[in-house]
Image (cartoon, rainbow, N blue to C red; front, side, top):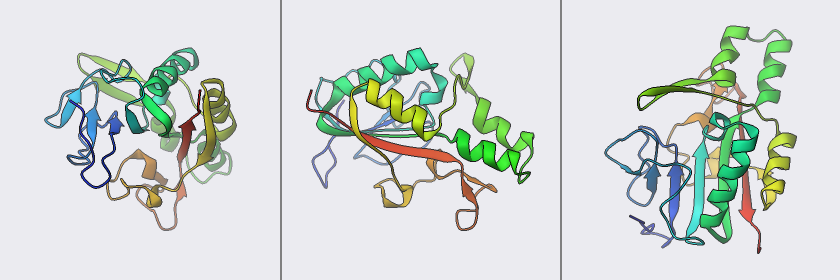
Length: 191
């Protein structure tokens, strides 16, 4: 069921929400069932084409390989209105590799963000790829998105909800730590 934000009359999807409930103005979609989850298919969204204002997916895209990701991004784009916003967060390979190569952290500190392991229903899923800004920018351009840029999680309507877009090393050191999430947003072109 589509819900509109009471404040803005917009349709906002939180894909891969897990246990995080952003409230009634969001449609929560996750492969595992929680009381706030409306749909469990995070790829084939049961919504009308061109009906969604914002899709937010934090640390979801890396569970698809590069070929699968193109198809996922294409399907999500179909659901966005012209000018609709796709906001992604993925582990930042550049930040993680810099932390490791400079000796700031050990391999053990970056294995989780790089190779992630999560139970999903009756199976366990793992990250299948990593991104730096250039690689995610290219996949988004090739999938028909425009105005691709980094976003500051502090300036989002979901900033009050701690999720992986706010991942830092050292863990939870949001004041002095290094952000290890690559946070990127883009828009659906007029095509």
